[in-house]
Amino acid sequence: MEDSDIIALYWARADHAIAETAAKYGRYLASIAINILHSPEDSEECVNDTYLHTWNAIPPNRPSVLRTWLGRITRNLSLDRYKNHHAQKRGGGQAALLLSELEDCIPAPAHTNHPVEEQQLAESISHFLHSQKQEARQLFVRRYWFGDPITAIAQRFHLSEAKVKSSLFRTRQKLQKYLEQEGLLP
Amino acid sequence: MTAEQLFRAIGYLDDALLEEAEAAPAMPRSSRLVWLRYAAVAACLSLAVYLGGNWLGLFLQATPQNNMSLQQDGGSAQYGASPEAEAFMDENAADSAARDKTATDRELPMLILGGSNTGAYGFEGYMAYDIDALVSANPWQAGSSPQALPVYRSTAAPDAEGIVPKPDFAAMQAVLLDIAGRLGYQPADIIIQDDYPNEETIRIVTEKYAATGDTVPPEFFAAGMVYWEQNGIRIEVESNLTTTIHLEPAVTLPEGYDFTHFASYENKAKVAQYLLAEYATLLDMEEPMLALEGGDQNIYGQRSFDIAFYEGAGDATQQLLHYFFNQVQFHCDDEGKLFIIRLYNKDLSQKLGDYPIITPEEALQLAEDGHYVTSAPEAYPGSALVAKTELVYRNGREETYLPYYRLYAELPTMESDNGVKTYAAYYVPAVQGQYIQNMPLWDGSFN
Figure 1 (cartoon, helix red, strand yellow):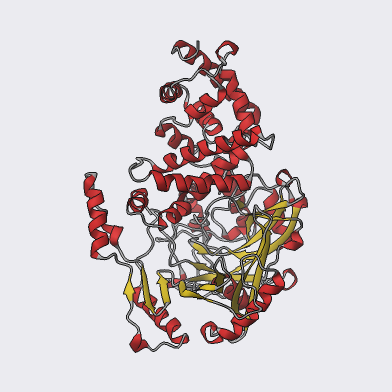
Figure 2: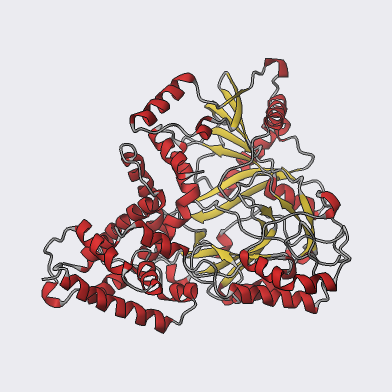
């Protein structure tokens, strides 16, 4: 079913909107949640919560790209769940590792809870990535948006794990400098 | 700024970056090697390659097991081919034609795997303390498995655009009348309707679209199901001829029968015997076989078993086909009452042939080499962790119904603190590799 038809089902409040969403994107969303949480039970609940959020959000929203719109919800819900589990000292899946790697982009003096405008930051990072070589930015997005394990990225791109890690490291370093230049890091 | 803020901001990268990352790489760089490896195997077996006007696949010489009766003209079928396969064919067309110009109607078409998007949420993993807790009624037995099994082309699979073939309303109505007849209703009493929306629904949807400046897509209001309802019974037939009988109010079973979701195996077996006696006419089977299976846990530690029946008459192959494609399932509601009966009726009219199959041991080796499909989040953990193997037909929205070996592999990383294990499903095509044009190679993502 086309995305526009699925969105139309939500607008019509048709119950099978969720079933159609699950059929088309369930596995994709589960892969995002699993990558972050590494737990089938938690991932299942995150994906279910994604459908609930979507049901509540459409209407009035009309996503231009349903796939990524859904993926963002799952990703945020997965991070929320990770934080909840982390507070309870339960397993954290890959999220802890991903966050640890992203610490590289934030020099110690800037590591505060000082709020940053999320949308502005996202636009800056997007702009930065567009300036990078294609493979480098693809590796970065696979790792930090989709949460893919290093081994999976290496297999997907037919690179050694060492090369993937090296590329990600260099991109993180460049991103830190870019964010500093943009004034997003004090 | 914190790493979490950065992580959340990355969530809002622009769509172009996400689409690029998802699309890349367009074709796995190694798939060509895999393809060539299988082509080489085929060559070693003196299997000829033929390129005809409408053919894109490789056709192989007949085998002793091949007693197929192709439905297509001249014993051939037309298939799409991956760019890799097409490139290979271009490069080898001359050689192929020179090697074999003797294709006969006894040849088996090459199979192209894929086309399934049946995944819902989560991945196919079964939680249990031990593999023996998982109960299957699969009639397949390793020791007496047929050496060749039929493969079918689905007539209901969505195309590349996700559009299902136009429903055959005459066939759907015939099925509905048949099922209603088995329940004792007379055809003259049955007025069949379809799910084309009523005027009020059309008006509401149209207005919603108009409010945002859009028009309703023309296919939005297309009918895709027929139904009949009367006095608390509603029979629905979908375009794939799956029939669902809704009972409203739900049927209360006599005292002494426990038909609740998490009733024990023994209690469900007792319920199954009652249902078999009560609905024998609906089942309309010569030798109804009970498929009482399940036993895995949900996240709350509850085990459940599902009740289904299938036709047990016929040889081992026919029983397999009935089990996987023509089950009748009985479902309870939250109060333990019977509220849905579902009859599956897959169209197996488009047979591609009887294909020789590999052994379970060969399937394990293929899995070791990465030739499997899975929804599990981890790579195949190795055959030492495979607790169970069974032959199955994947019968969702696949374009081709063919047998696979389902390997239940334990994932040690997912064992719970209380000792509950997770057995993930890894599927290896059971058809011999030389008949598969795009042997799967796990790429580290869900496939």
